[in-house]
Image (tube, rainbow, N blue to C red; front, side, top):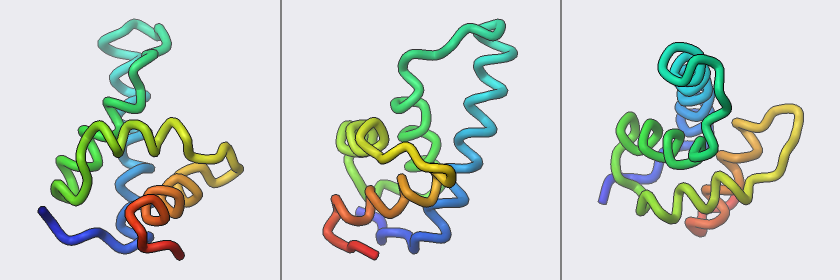
Length: 87
């Protein structure tokens, strides 16, 4: 298992996943909402930062992350909390 990233690294990876996912929805899905977005984000983040969590856990944690103005940061904090490394 890869080392757990710092909150800043995880936040940036989630922002990049969001941009990549938006591109995917627009170009591949022709603007249709992708219902499996959390699976996409999990694969992107783990591919970028290493396998610091199981993909199924990451997907679950992403769907549970609180909806806030800065979702990437709150999702990163939630993920780290679930891993046991709270803020």
